[in-house]
Length: 147
Image (cartoon, rainbow, N blue to C red; front, side, top):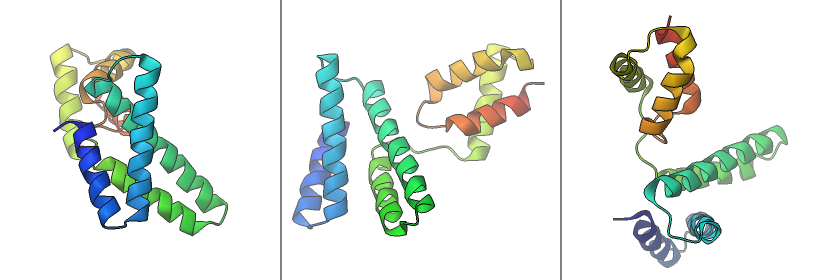
């Protein structure tokens, strides 16, 4: 099932159940996907849809942090609820141990062993595990496995 089909189903269900936060978050995702498709002038592929979803999560995380700093916990909680909804459309994220194993295997596969090759490893991680391994976590792990 494609992201758009799943999105349409969940939007219908949220509207029927009168779940306002879910409905609004799903409409925003649909709008973001439509806007990206319009800019491109062609249908989005899976990687482009993933980019749109990851941007949506990042934007909401930044908003939640700003609301927390500004003393608005109710708005921060709403943003976190929307993040949970968007994350249903993303691939399951790896744990730190799974990410470490994947990076060790990738470094061995590419023959990378030195710190100066960190950029090559990060480029390969981004290409292969985008949306599955957090970039900050990958950078931390990559720095520790390359000596």
